Image (cartoon, rainbow, N blue to C red; front, side, top):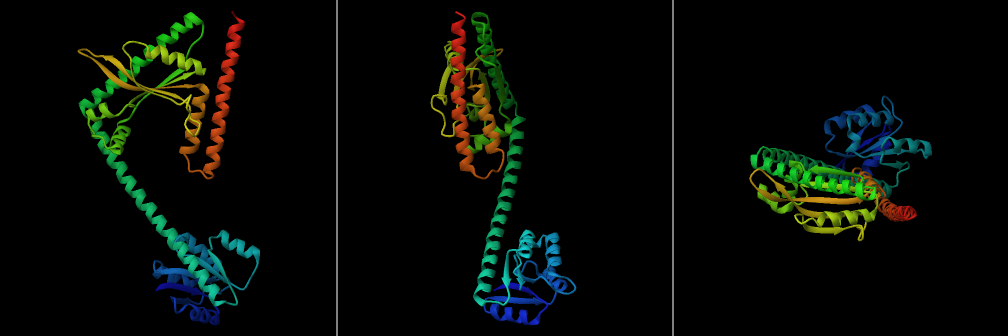
Length: 356
């Protein structure tokens, strides 16, 4: 049976509550706040609920609540205030302090039992969830430590570092070719097809984590055969038609292998995400061989990149409420940005025609 502690300086109230609860709980009693704290200190893990009078000699109910908060007991033990008052101010103050419920005098047996049961069940469920979260947190922490150790081990291997050098060379190769096209456009048409290029090489931790998650072997061959985004580039263009023109010119080069294309501009993701993704094989010339290395190249307009960056920060970097509403509003913003892209492209076309 669960244990309840009843704290009231009036003996008649303690006796009444004991009579009501004795068939369902083990009932402990205390005459004032000092005695209650002593009993809580000795048996805090055994007490499932505290029924607490507010007005008592030596130490009143508010002082007991304050001490329980300091010691962290309020997180584990629901407090139900015993009171003959129906003051809204008093009840509000108690709820702000973390009180679970009120049991008003005179006592009505069925209400007393229901209020206690609800409070005990709610705290029991909450505590179970918190323990599960703590256990999961510990598990994730251990997994993270294992991943870091394994990633560090991987990073120290000579063959892994050689592979990373090849991916870095692939990034430089793609950047060079795109910059050459940019320079040619600047000379021929007096404008640039893209604004900037951002690149990144996937970290050893991210590589290990992805291989583990996908069930691929954690080896150099496993990386080379199964991962396509170790070398990543993002090309930011001014207008949508610049993207398609640049992609056509880049993939038309006879030694660039187009392995996969995903067009999220013509076919946006349900959340509104827009971008054009290429997986390409890029020739890398080493001292004694030529090899093809995979790279992922994403093409976006300035507006697409702005939306994607903010959407990631707003939605995935924080715990947010009203997720459905936020997703809908982000989708609306994505649609607005799409309209803006094509309106700006139209304006540019009119300006270009006026110069002919």
